[in-house]
Image 1 (tube, rainbow, N blue to C red):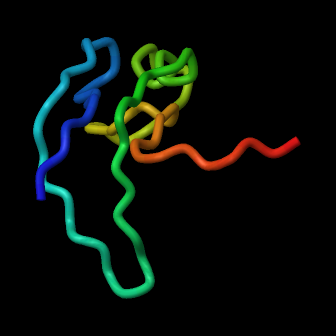
Image 2: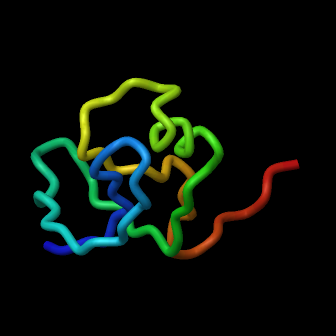
Length: 74
């Protein structure tokens, strides 16, 4: 299974959009289809080194799930 991801390879580098392999869901897990994902300001802290991490790292905690919408709750 393939997916695309924003990857940061080292501090101070630009984000790259790459295609990568995604493991299929294991027992008790589900596969969720995302229509869009984005980077937020917190991801920039990974690039500048304000948040120490091990590189490479996949960013983009902000996601929009694909599929049908349910009823709105009041």
